[in-house]
Image (cartoon, rainbow, N blue to C red; front, side, top):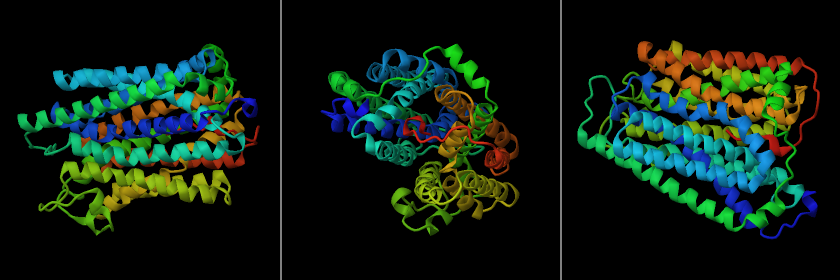
Length: 450
């Protein structure tokens, strides 16, 4: 039992786990400016550039169940060490990609990096909940998730600074060798420091492996991948939830990776300083002497989309204590769909504000879909959770589809793709509100972060 385990050294171990949460949120959100950067560096179409996001999120589809099996076999600390080593390998491949200027290596590096992050999430969520007094497990996991969210806000700002300096990708723009070299140097610097930070964390967990292992939860997952998958597929609500997670992550990531292109386009804010009507925004996105947002400024402004998710999560947490979760999900998905339809149908300068506000309503979707599914699934928690984590692969499909549409119809029109996803999610929420509850889920260790 957790209460009987030694908690000596649990506080520094929990602090290190919280840094892991921050790191994977930070690294994941850096994909947004990276998509914009590789489009200019390698002269790619929107669809081809979105392959970077697809390579990253494809890892979830291929490694979630194996990660659960690995955790069941090797326990928390060895699994975390393997995850961190994998992440370092991904960073090293990214360094090679930046120095050799080879786009397929970028895709490989992102896939390896995300594979490590996937394994890390599977191991770190229950560990964060277990490191300390069991009475405060919910608080610890929520606290760590907060740092994950902070990472998603900071990532686009730093990524745009490093990857998009002087870079433009509008039709007819020529990327000079000097600008290309600067962007590649930024990628090289970012992933060099990532590798160093992760190496420090790996060393910490190796040196404190006995202390952390003493506080780690006992694994309850079945290590048989085939059995887990079969169990998950036997439940219609596990399948419904998997589809919902697929559509949600696909929509959220597609909007995030497209946001810099969208805000930078001439019919939104490419020739307007409307962004600076928002209070305090100049501290996040410094204003220059040129009217309109550059690609670098638009990349930094993407942080506002993720900041909306942080604010919405705080508001949503309060609302969920008073409002039925399925009804709140139906409301948030309906509003998100309406916002996307506004951008699609009306566009213009005001569409920039509308698009950024979508993040506010994305905020509660992942955890609510997750818990609604767990409550209604007849499959085991481990199998259902594994399927839902695997469904994060929607983050690979969504950007490719929206990139295909934007390449032929424009960035505003492309928001019809997430709009349709949100409509489907609203239907899921309505269905969940009418479905019978199989179990009441109150275990903080199953709430994977996205």
